[in-house]
Length: 241
Ligand SMILES: [Zn+2]
Image 1 (tube, rainbow, N blue to C red):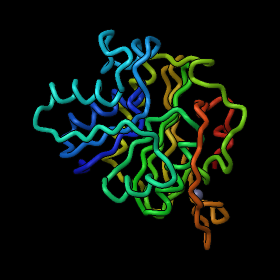
Image 2 (image 1 turned 90 degrees about the vertical axis):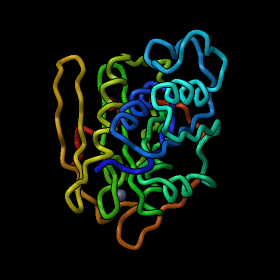
Image 3 (image 1 turned 60 degrees about the vertical axis):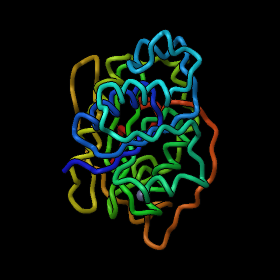
Image 4 (image 1 turned 180 degrees about the horizontal axis):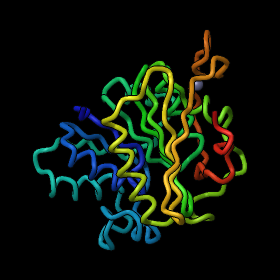
């Protein structure tokens, strides 16, 4: 089922294709959130941003292009960083939130807020030639069920590099996951290998002792400031349950 409203957090490599895909799917209301300005290094993998947009807020650049293609779609463009004080409202005011960020801390903040509010979050991360994606929904596993703690030795996207085509694949996959519900108590982690052109799916189950969503637990939201990529190669995804 197509969600009526979607919030895209991050309008970069993932957020550009994800916003196009959810608009094509027929979403009725779209919110874009990103604090950053368009930079030269963004252009090769962030198709809403053109050379003439350099230095402009990414949300305005993306909203303009979307409005040209979908003139009847209401778009709320917010140039701001998602924080502990604002993140819960995003989940309460949208049917689905798409994590198109590249910061580990922000990804865990979004996951914790999804747990607190009972919202739906479509997580994704991409680095070099690999990508991960998973749908988080009420009563199912959260990001801390998968990774337990945020990895600390993660390079930034600028340091490690991202294949532009992989960001396009993963952003489109996020839009598909926004429409597909998980079985109760579990989720599918999709691991995409862009070099081998292979997709592996790992079943992730809710951990009863999860620090965020386990029995009797409640996550505490805290502000973060760590621009880095959640990388498949340095995180414990290989041993995911
Ligand atoms: Zn959990």
